[in-house]
Image (cartoon, rainbow, N blue to C red; front, side, top):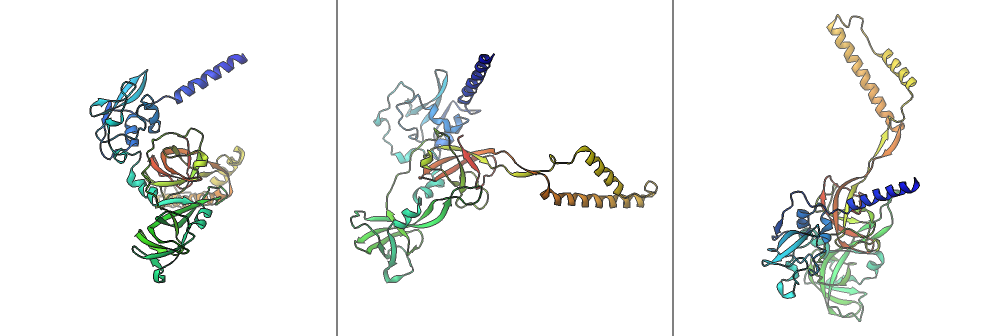
Length: 404
C-alpha cells in the first residue's frame, strides 16, 4: 500500500512537471510574420507564445543563429513543427535559414547590429543605459572629483575649464564622463529601511583632459546639466546597446521593487523600476520576472464574533431599544417619524461598530496576486534596472518579483 501511494505521488508529480513544461502557443498566433521597423523581440515572441520569455526554447533547433536578436526589418519568421514541437524558421531574402537544413554564413546578411530589432523599446531604456549607473559609496568617494572651475564659477557648462583632483597620473584616458550622486537605493525590510545597496549616479556631462597634474585641467565637451564642485569622473565609454534575449532565470529569484524613477504613485507598462536583486543573486540582462502585488492586511471581525447566545442577547437588546409608536400603522406621520428615528439609531450603532473595528478582530494578510512581468536590462552587483512589459493592474513600490 505504501509503495502504491509513492507511485501515485510520483506519477502526479511527473504529470505536473510535464504540464509546467508545456510550451503554449498564443491564441490566434500567425503561421508567419514579417518583421517591421519598430518591432521588438518581446513583441514578436508574444505573437507566437503565451509566455514570451520562453523564446529561446522555440529557437533551440536553430543552432546556426548565434543570437536571436539579429533579426531585421523585412525578415520573415515562420512557424513550423519539428518532432512534434513548435519551432520558428527565419527567412531572409526569401531563403529559409531556420532548422538544421542550411548553414547561415556571415555573408548572408552584412547588416550592422544596430539595425537588428532590440529586445525592448530602446526609447524607454536608453537613458538608463547611457545616462545612469549604480555605484557604491566607496566607489563614488574614491573617484576623481571636480575641485573648482576657471574663475571659480559655481557651475560649469560646455566650453568651460574644470580642475580635477584624484586623477591617476598614469591614466591614459583623454575623455571622461561626469556623474553626480543621486538617490540612495535601500533594501526592502518589513521593519523599515533596509541595508544601503548603492547610489544612483546621474550623468551630467563629458570632459576631455587638457593638462595632467594635481589638479588636472579638463574642458567641458558637453553638459546635460550644470557641473558642480564635487561631481565625480569616470572613464568615458561608448558601449553598444546590449543584445540579449528574454529568458527566465535558471535559479530561484525573489525580490522587491525598491524604486521607480519618474513615477509618482503607480507604476505602469514600459516604466523602469529598480530591483533589490543583482548579479550576485543570479540576475542578468534579459531575465524575465513576474510581478506580484503585495497582499493587503485586513481586519477579520467576523471570525472573532461572540458565540450564538451572546448574539441573541445583543439582538434582544437591540430590538428593545428600537423606537416604536402605538399608532404607527394608522398615522402616516407617526410611521414616518418612527422609521426616521430608527434609521438614525441604526446609523449611529453602525458608526460605533466601525470605530471599534480597530480594537477588535484579527489582522489577516491577503495573498499576493500576479499582475504582470518585467525584464531586466541592466544588472549591477546588488541592484538591477528592469522594464515593466505588461500589467493587469497598477504596480507599486515594494511589490514582489519572482521567477515567472
